[in-house]
Image (cartoon, rainbow, N blue to C red):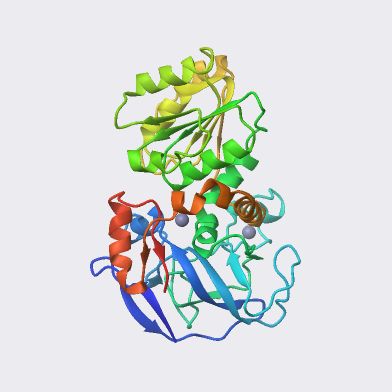
Length: 362
Ligand SMILES: [Zn+2]
Ligand SMILES: [Zn+2]
């Protein structure tokens, strides 16, 4: 049996229930959850924003770290060949099939046509497939990785969504050079972690633009070239600030981690001619006008990135192992801790923007 947070009906909202634990399938695993973290996506799922994709009843939560209780037949090592044993702390990726066009030919498993996401449901046959739970079944098609000892469970959990997304985006961008200026738009978990990664990639200047002030303040000890609070400034001032820090050219890279349509428009104005605008954050149903002629004349590159494959999870864990303690990443990203019974409070805090990333410890 496992207690878990179930969303069975949008009107009623999430509630804790005790579920049967089905068998561990060959190639899969059963873990005891050490920590899960709340994502904006979980809030949107509860609000019915993704009612076309989510399948009720579902167990909420897609970010998490767990300790292996039982390994299914045939699962002996993780995705990079490290031996796996009960008691190991692991993370796992969404499934991809390895057999569709996008997996096999395009080599972009994040576009897999047969993907199954944790936290999206449905819950059936006793397969616990959401992280806001005491236990979870890692599905046989999921690649798993052992968590390095130096990485705490809440931070590893955040890596399974925010940081691996950043690592995928960096993988899809040209190399950052030592003379480059990188602007990060958005000071949520993705933006803050993108700024951390850009700093450690050796960029000459990293500028973080977002709100609220408390989130910007979480990066106070970092060697950022500037922190710009969007609550205190107009877009024109921010664009001017970036230009004045780059001899009038604009930034070599703008990484959009903010979400609203205006962030794309602002990013287009901040990137230098020949530079790259990387879009990770956009999440709205709107259409944004694009100045296609100016874009061509300025030879801009606009790239997008979604989710991540297991190599980016690996990058994320290594990054945390090397830098999290020195940069204070856990306190910068993970906020208050909640029990399963307090998940409604955690979701409300996330929705209100009152917290960076609430941590659920069952
Ligand atoms: Zn997430
Ligand atoms: Zn596939």
